[in-house]
Image (cartoon, rainbow, N blue to C red; front, side):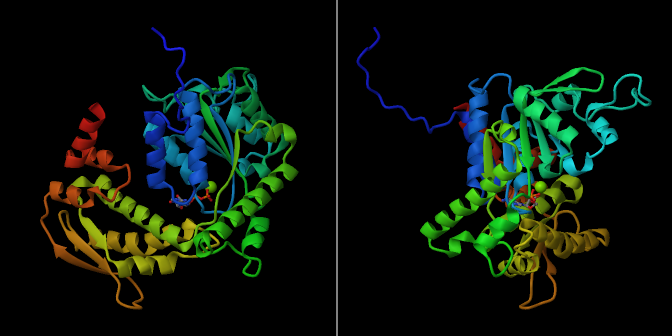
Length: 393
Ligand SMILES: Nc1ncnc2c1ncn2[C@@H]1O[C@H](COP(=O)(O)OP(=O)(O)O)[C@@H](O)[C@H]1O
Ligand SMILES: [Mg+2]
């Protein structure tokens, strides 16, 4: 018997399991850009339930905001989470496609043109579909710096955003209705920065340095400035085809600190994956992390500068130590820094550790990468097992 007099309040903010997984994975990888995460998860949820607008891409996103704040990274992280491959993102640097012969790299040239058979268009259906998995059939396309797109490229883009189709040089159609389209632009960055740090002329210190209410207001103001700049520059027909404009926030020192931990865990992961036979564990002390942060903080470049300092101060010395066999498989290496020292100090604290013990040691650090890591070294840790059994249950 149906109950005609129910009055149960429903919760529209709860997401299904797949969307919740994506949300969690992105939060583990992306720092300080919660709105962007939320928007991507929302769009994915709509796609999963078949509620997306028909005949359109899965989602059309415009990302604005400072350099090195995670615009590209979040696209890679989404691909990593959904199709297990961050390299599946098709990146198109709009500045590189100014002339018709360059557009031909994207769509191929018409039949009869010299070299027609040799051109393999970058945006063919095969390329789009090549990273689909059994369960997830979504492609990820990133158009960088769209304000630099030529008219010809712009027209292609409008067609994709609106009709989810692209016509190749030889008239074949490519279907983008299973694609997430991401576009980035530097528009408004100068104005946004001036708003936050008019005297310094570069990105703000962490938003959290100000009282929470002020920070929220400032973030809203910055976001509005960015969106206004986009509305001034781009035509309404373009703006109307976007599902969402997200303004990425400048990263502050607290956020860079969290990104440092993520990046260090990736270096550790690299050590394991590149050569499991020679895997070793390194642990960076607080002083070492502070040193890397000091070297790597230039708020104009967000996390880019930090990554460079990790490569220079940690990865390069490590690889010398590996090449000269000062570090061998099974070693436990402490990375420290003398007070005001000019560089990091490496010391061996143990050797001969079995692979299982090493995986256990680094296990908790690596966001979302654990099972990949464990698989690569042929080891099943207790956490992978429990994650699996809880899913089954
Ligand atoms: N919000 C963030 N969370 C985590 N890592 C980040 C973030 N922003 C930047 N990074 C790190 O810095 C690198 C450069 O950032 P990227 O996403 O390429 O910047 P952009 O906003 O200019 O596209 C990324 O590969 C990532 O390692
Ligand atoms: Mg980028």
